[in-house]
Length: 223
Image 1 (tube, rainbow, N blue to C red):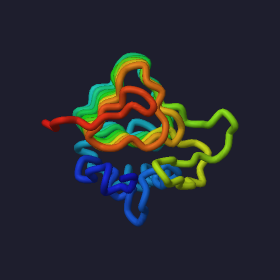
Image 2 (image 1 turned 180 degrees about the vertical axis):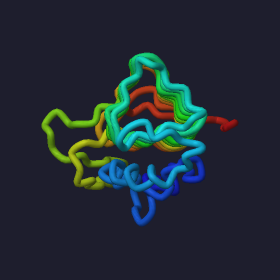
Image 3 (image 1 turned 30 degrees about the vertical axis):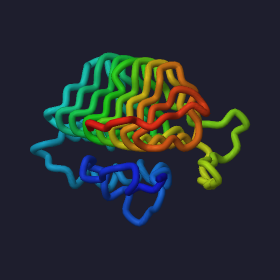
Image 4 (image 1 turned 135 degrees about the horizontal axis):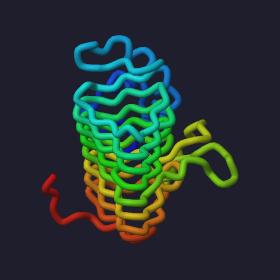
């Protein structure tokens, strides 16, 4: 349930090659910057503008003049980066994705059609196809004791070996407003997180997360 094939449809990202030869999606986090530097020069000059060192922006993307973008970064076609967005580097913004006003990104992959539209912080994380984070919801990417992040699910603990790791959201995940995704959170496909939640560990696919220890299965899935 926490492996790449169980969470993410790689046909919906320009970064599919990033996930080759790895088993868990968080293993891609330390590789994002180097991958962008390798991929960027291969992008079509007809489709992408090389605005500055290690920054490639699709000509069909809409980027507000007040947005701050630091490379390495790729912003794909049809994406929208709104007023005062802050992209701090090592970021891939997928096709038709939305990065909202005052949203901050750092070391992330947003798959196609992802929405982080209002006051979000997304750091050291991967958001799958059509995942959506409600207003004010954030990833917490470093533990308070600064130890390495461990992914915890029922009866299993997976050592990641990395200090900074926010969350992995599977395809079609919906995160409610003002929720916090604690370090090492993995949310399965088609799952909804209630607003104001503090989430940690592995959340099953096709579920509704109401509170820690109160997770129910969806009766139907129309995604």
